[in-house]
Image (cartoon, rainbow over all chains, first blue to last red; front, side):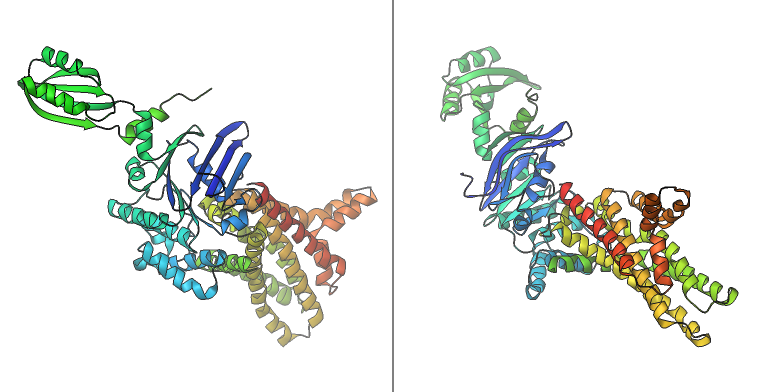
Length: 320
Length: 235
């Protein structure tokens, strides 16, 4: 995607605090109608990057722009287009939920006549009806997170920045929050950071993996899987002698390695793990070869999981 | 101005939903009430001069309690991340917060009007002198609050903000006394000029001098400008 059509664009962005560089030369874009997941271990630079896009801190070098506004000089204009939920929901404990949302609505310059309607919309979207009159300090962690999400949605911003939006929610609430994000992402640009890998595959069109302040990869979840794991894994259970099975499988075209283990309690059976080339048809050939001589009890092809990909990226030592 | 107004309204409702505003007003009224009764019944003065003098000192100790939370609480509570990423310019945030604090000051000041009732019942005080005293008191308070607001932008810790503000305000209050130790005329004039209390005395005596009005307004202006620029710089 070119940076012209991008709603969020980072160009060679770095952030230094004194001599410590937290973000190194980061470049990526998020387009309209796109949900991008921001993945990285703690301290990878996710929050700092989010803060730079939101305009809370300025980049030391490089350029961050939101809807064409340079965050270094036009951050107030850009702020009208951004809904931001920081890692820790920014709530005024002494206010009640409705007073808090009303303050944010006014500060976002929503016309007074539309405020009531906007409040109703976000309260319904985040399921806050039961606590609208409650003081914020009395709310549970899940509700606090949802009030934070509600304030970000106020004013229907073009860009939604969510720093770990599902942290602290129970499974049901996580499901609801994902629905809200997914619905919003159909027409807006969403960048959200998370630790939960499954979440990324569920709702993101693209995933950015970051560690030690550097962007390691950005691609679709399936693109990452393809790019990283050139070989796939096929596991099977066969009733036959280990040595023969191994020799037979090694001869199959497309099979790279074969591991045969005896199965405890079943002297006749062996479990086999093969690494195979990613092209189609390899497992069919394996099945044909095996069933010619023995009984095949199970055959499964396993694509690499996002967990493996993520761990492989972040466990790579930091570049000098 | 809409943005500043939104911040102002939020500030006021925060003040009144926490015990701080009630505490400050109550302590201030108790203190002023005591000084007033002392000067009226024990010293036999039917003026507000003595009371105003004590109100000034009381103010320098209560202003830090009002101003300490202005920005420190936003930083420590994580709400600064919202406030500074909303479509608000730093000056709008500073002005909104400052006017919220000034409203508490005006409320405190208005409550002391109770003291005027016995004064007018039992004596014939000079209304113009009382008015000029009140004008001076509000101006002094506005300058002190702006200084407190500035120190509150510098730290996450409300207690640190309050202690620094109290120290600085007391220094400005008593700096006039250093005059006597100076040989150089320039230094004597400078220390006299910087004194918050010396300018305030003019108002208590019934003099609304342009120089004194300008002094307090300039101090407030400098402190608010510094705060605004600091918020821009810390990004």
